[in-house]
Image (cartoon, rainbow, N blue to C red; front, side, top):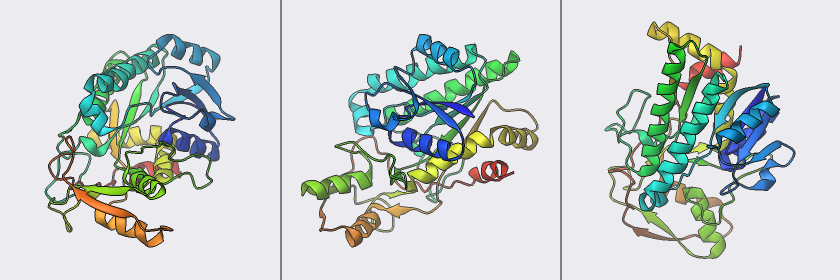
Length: 322
């Protein structure tokens, strides 16, 4: 299957391209390279440009009329940056996605898989969320993801009402870490925002690693998160692609009516605290990490206690295996 992958030169997008190829699919990469790495596109069909450029999108589909699905990763993702520059996030995450979805609808496309975020959820009392848990996005980044989901839902609903084929799946997840096991791609930012990347950067630079927030209602006072290996996350996107039709058939049977957008959580169901991850890192690192503690940053929510349950993925995995 030929698949358009927006943001396919980025961390998660490039890893998913490798997983697609391993599964026998062909990615067509669209990336502006503002944040992505050109070397991650080598050997792949690649278009450099903005995901919101509708003329370019029409050209891509003219060049590759056999594209049958779109995986949408392209986005800004740094929470503190979104707090400081919300207009950047609403323009590049929301407006650009609207142009993409509108172009896909114009082109008669039927399958969109949107790489969303579990940061949309409110902090639960029991540290666990499902697809039906309350939403309370606490940063412009998280709100941009929710807005994009809502736009996609509205466009899919309008398409269905007009007899058009557009449908979507939104995958919500927390904290991808790690790299492609075959080392074809991986983390690359000099100043990474994710926890593991920050620890590696601090160790390599011989600087202090700062634990931000130590008074949360967790087992050791530090933030609790469900960390998912990026290769598992890439495989989840491939399963969503391969199980797309079956997933909608099962959803229609369960709900009694067809749906335009499916929401699916992706996670391990096992949370680790920041201190636990630091301890695990210290146990295998070639030299000691200098650790200091400080207050939680703005935009991080009231508890950082979200424990992400991914039960909704089971149906897709089963469907893709048949």
